[in-house]
Image (cartoon, rainbow over all chains, first blue to last red; front, top):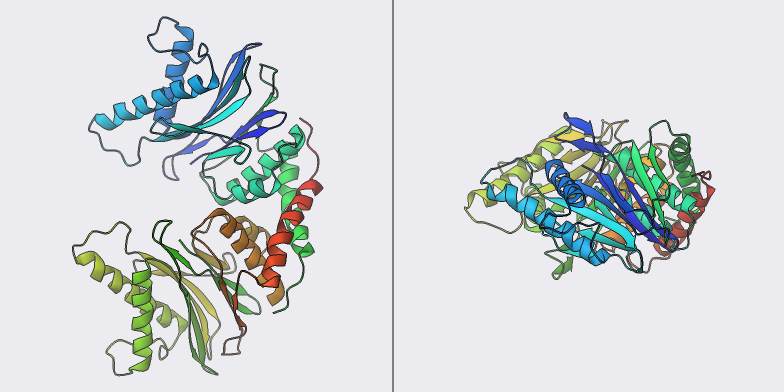
Length: 243
Length: 243
């Protein structure tokens, strides 16, 4: 399992991903699921992946190879003229990798599917955030749906829905994501620390904060420990019920 | 979809279920999912069901017929000597109903599976709470795992994990369940109002409070509206993060 959230704020984009991968509960590893492609001053593109690890690693490797070998017949996301074209390239790559495995006539215990969040900005246009499906098609975040989750999305969703505010500060957004991830980590063994965090300030055309949050991170510990008490006091604050 | 929670408290048992059933999103109905079998002064048994509606209705009907026709070769849950035996009867009935449909060689879009929460007390022993699987086997709630959820369990779980307290009052427990159900209803169209609520006071051997909570219930509205604000203030109360 996996949990990743990409969020659109008025001040930019924020991304958080966990790092746990598992095949069953007895084969657990730590893998990076956040990948950034950057030409400082010109474009910043971040991908987060969920699903079959072989599929997502192949997609990322193909995107990276193309960005290094400009003669490749396939376009590089570092050359695409718009974020929409970037999303199309990622979607096409994802679909072709899945098709390659599915066509081989092999049977696997789990599917080869994967889902990808792509966000970023190319100079001259707005920051954009996309959710890319295994079929290669995609949807874009909007004011009504300003964030995307992939992987184990349910445990951490109620707090996002209730506390998200497009005007929130980076600090508040990180706090919100930490609470959402903590709720998920407490409920599903397939989601685990450390977490990767990245912020992107609109029109900066470069990575903002980038940080790995380990299990002993003091801020994370304070949020994780404090949230239980905060929830309880929120709960006590609710009006009494007469049975 | 469905959402039901059965919870063990020091003062007794509490049950809540939604009433929405759906086949896809365009075929939505309201059905009761909470069923009580009672011999006041002697035993109180409550079942809540999730899964294929034809399966769960057949199980409940068979259990009800047997409790009325004592000559039936199968035992009635109104005569079983212990809650463990009650759980076995419910489990055997559930397995046989599922097997009947599965063996008919029919194919269905959805599976015939169902899951059942059974809780209650028989005079002379403690109140007990069981979760019954489609295979007919079951597990019992304990001090470590004092509640069971069935159906769409994920959205409403974090608050249960954080705010549950075995000593809580009926009023606090109802509030907790309302928050958990509200989080789920806001996230999944397959879970909907009205809700059914039942409390059972240990050693009372009869139904405690039994109530249908409609969408215009003032307590539910106060909890649903108040929880957003309470969560936000809980969130603001968390320590600030330095990026």
